[in-house]
Image (cartoon, rainbow, N blue to C red; front, top):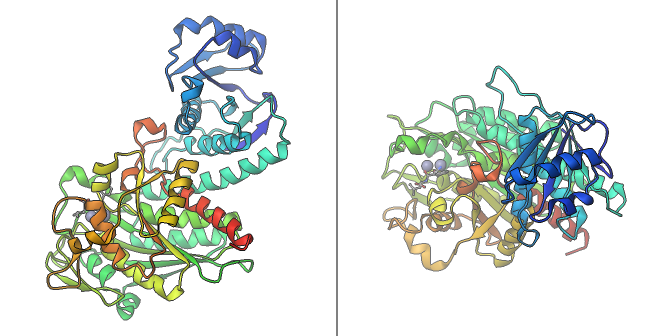
Length: 497
Ligand code: BES
Ligand code: ZN
Ligand code: ZN
């Protein structure tokens, strides 16, 4: 989809999406840049409209060269927060697509003082709304070809809007690619296929990728990944992505780590059926890390970034790892397996250990780690846990700014006894059933080579819910956040901070 900024509705746009606040319709329409006859037709429908936030009204047009007007209501202006604005854009685009509109004009509401930011967000959200997962469908729906963001009153030069749209489009395209990758069925998206995909992404956007197989991992002593993978017929992979432009202003890399469990059955502690259905998306941390690095490479940010992805399939089998087994991780610390379904933290332990040799400036890991994070936070934000308050608050702030939200849970020394092992150094399960997300993070903390590290549990935001106004399936959570983090980091470095 091509997105452009325009100061009036271009002739090519056949479908018009209009955003209205609660209040007198006529007054609002007065300042909207659409032909008078359209205004009259819309005004006639006032009584039929439900003005509640996010309710929509569709008006087929018979004259004037336009086909349809879609009205999306925003509720009261004072209460129209960012999340509502974002979802309104998505709802409008999705409805237009449902009506088979291929050329849209979005008449942007007067929403924020910062017009550039509003256009950035509109472009980003229009892009992620224009997504459906189609590789396995015979009939493909027609894509939206163009989407013009119209703001008649703006005094800002169009070039500046174009720049925001270009930025937003790159990130959104990579979000959509991460979604496609996560949505792929477990049978077709094995660790090796994931590694091949990573290599393709590297070639496409400009970063290097290497992948270790099981033999190499054995030589290196990655007992965590090999342990979890033992029950699977698919070979585990350890994928390393390196983006190191000549212009890089940091010697020490920032490292992103992504959980890459291509299917999580739970292993011998097998999951009940209901809990297993979405587990082909248990590599969503990996997809997001991969495509955040792809976005960073496409934006040519002058920073050194490394991505580490342990990729395995967690299967029950006669050769599978057992509760009670003890695994030796890359760092040398031993892990007591108390539950084979707490596999994510075991493979991440090896990746965190491996990160040490880069002497990283900081580490952020993304993982669909615990169902407990959904219990704690619901499905509208991911969880963040970090011993570094500054890093954590920066990520919380950028989460709000991008709409890719994260919210803190505590990570304190007090919790450490929860993961003390009986016969090994650490146990992969807490002593009680409480605070499962914290226990998971505390376990990872034992392996983090630096406290400049943040763990983001994206289990809560792994899939879209109805209120998100997005296609069902993966959301690509974390791509926008990590990319924005890298942009801000690059800015800081450029100013010598
Ligand atoms: N992949 C799951 C967590 C998950 C649950 C992700 C729901 C997305 C949606 C993880 O490997 C897991 O099974 N965790 C267990 C941990 C427990 C055994 C300590 C869980 O959350 O139940
Ligand atoms: Zn699991
Ligand atoms: Zn898992």
